Length: 298
Figure 1 (cartoon, rainbow, N blue to C red):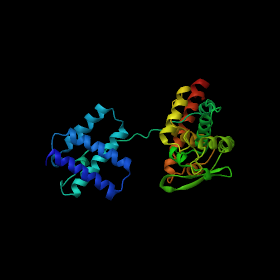
Figure 2: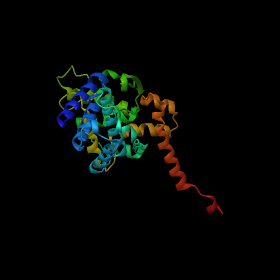
Figure 3: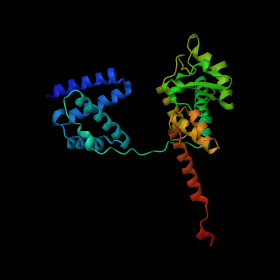
Figure 4: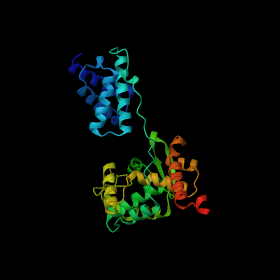
């Protein structure tokens, strides 16, 4: 089997992922990139690749590209899927990657800002301009309701009713979230004065948050605006940090885990439990800083 045949095989595998596995475009793009790099790097055809070849590739690739353990694990998953496909097509009788130890993914705790940091960030946004007021309203709402950035992008004007917001999350799961008083005040003013000025003649636009051209805001635009405000106050954070902080601050305030799960739209409460670890870490730091041990008492 030639290198040209290998490339053709990759194209057939991608078609398989799209048509039969029905994977998302993002996942298919990642798999195509990684397997393409693998085929370029190996010195033999795919039917002769050994476990040692794969291990060597993964180690060198990780060092050269500075990959995190999580990315390495994702790439291993892509290669495992590719060789399973080769088995399915009778090109190989084995899957060499099954002999490798799976990369252990560290359970990284989410990045969380303090209440004071978020207050400083939100208050730093100049609301004298239409775009500034929109941004203050948007980021206040994301924090107030623990929204994913995609959920904020997809909000429509009609989703805001009676001081609550209707959100369509992952797998089209819908939930209703109460909106805080500050966010409500900003939303009412935004809908009354700011949004009409941005939309102008685009009366058919249904998106809640729009850009200067009156069209629905994109994820990239929201990322860019948030990064700009963070850099101004030297805060290390991402838009998703607002969601992490929302959950953590609720638990710190005494909210029960099940309620936080519902507000976040998590299908499995185990996903929500990571925020209890963040809260526990804060308690441990406080204990270590202020607790007087027995030797000091004596």
